[in-house]
Length: 252
Length: 314
Ligand SMILES: [Fe+2]
Ligand SMILES: [Fe+2]
Image (tube, rainbow over all chains, first blue to last red; front, side, top):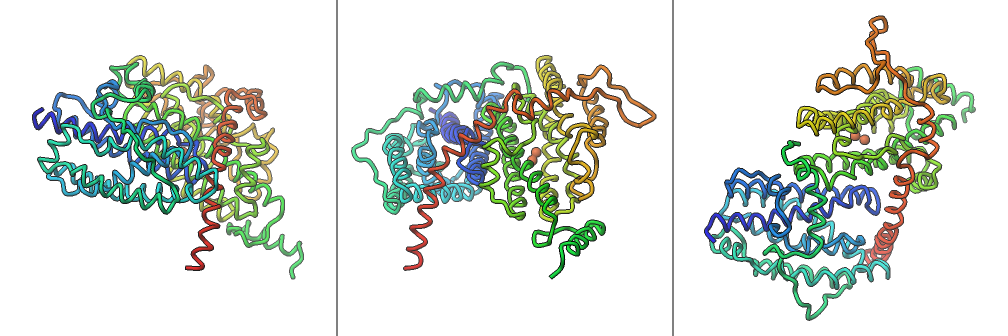
């Protein structure tokens, strides 16, 4: 894997992860638990898909084969998508969504913060903008985790179930793919090990405050970064890509 | 203390002087009720309207289109919020309004009881439905009730943006591949008459118009607005090579406007009474979201109660 290939693959991991998370979040729009929350989540989806667009634009430029961000988003198959498995997990109930979200927000917050120092100027510019947005996302999802954990018996139960179910997908966030290792060596990507440390500390403190617990001895499910996904991803893509695939010559 | 008659005179005088009526001012009960009905209907329309458009967010055909649509649907929800707040100044709670909607007692704009079947419908809604909404709403910026007027000023700015974006979607389609052009024409065919219905029944069948005009809740009649909309929209359709689906459409030099076929008023009343193509689905979706959100709202309330106490101690 040469530098250009590694950078391209690395950008796809980041871009696809943002895109699939944003796509999942946008499924909530118009169906949220109350109006203010519906708008907040829509706003988070907007930011997240915005990140995906910038990252995929850059990926297309790095690839330099005449594809643009839409070609990358709409004309790759599931095996060519490299998002982490966590983000493709179904929305479920609002606790499922918020637990998935807080895992991702804590990760993205520390990741983008570190990425501000990237040697790659495009990425550091993106990170400086994104870290502001994600710190709001993170406050929002932490706010809910505290309320679910320490709210009613029902909400506590739902949040704990969501954690028990989703914890197995968190290990992948910190397991570097070959392209990430190369980018880390080049001082383009932050070290996942250092992010993992910060992430664990945050999540442990948050869950403690929320009276929620972290499951032990969980086998971590990997594979997303190699394009080996859960069965959910292809349904997301089938829906998302349907129009451009039906009319491949059309411009929208 | 002033007598009711004196209060009414003050109220009438304010109306006559084009002054705003504010929440603390005395107002006739009929005026208050008319406003609650109209503003809450308007708020519900914004929120229910998120459903047909939200239907295409996950399938928007480009990332840019996805972002634009998400932002638009978010705006509509924001309009719902301002309007619920404006209605609350009249002494009704949002819960009461939502309950009335879910019980089928409060109405929302019938246009949202039509399905969004293709991507072109997202263009048609922005161009036609937001366009018609603007015609109705521009005059409401100068409506007599202060909070409603101020909400409408904010809303109108965003609605004109939506209309331009919708027209842009239609233009891209109309100037695109033959299939895209057909998609655009099909959407115009399906949305044209339902949009004309948005201005309400013909003036001679509109029971509330007289009071509404008197109170400056309305400034132009349904038929006047409908005519204005047709005059504005026909050239826009022609400009992008689409055909308004009305064989009788003809410029009338004498009235400086188009003659056009009125919508099918039987269909209008049928949809209002609940038998439109999506009435059941729209209401069911709103009720489902509300019921599934119940434990979420309860968790937030329970937490607030527990932790307010703790904050007092610490
Ligand atoms: Fe609106
Ligand atoms: Fe709008």
